[in-house]
Length: 145
Image (tube, rainbow, N blue to C red; front, side, top):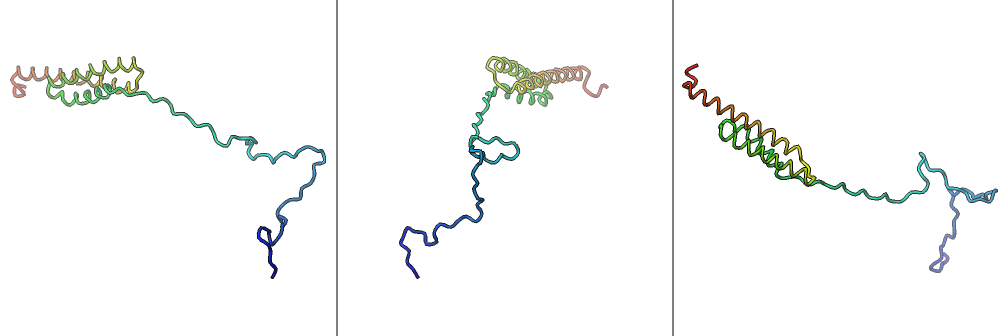
């Protein structure tokens, strides 16, 4: 067995069996790389530019409160005065929040609009319940019908 000094390859330089033989270009121009499949551009940036996040509009808290109070005003219209008071509070908060949304460019306008509509419905149902209560009370209740 023979000894090879360190740093030398004992097998020597082996040719690549899969390499294609290089032929000189008869025209003297450099050979262009192979065309990219599917029409991709030859030169690309390694990474695309990151997308910046869209600016997020701030929500109006009063609009959300108006919607919640407006929804509560509908079942609370069973008690006439309570339905009118809660519905009126929801409608007022909804109108105030609509002004704030328009001035400050905030989002959730739909919450404010829902609070206004449900507040007026609660006021209307409370008034109807109050009128029905007065009519029934003046006529002696359900027994007189």
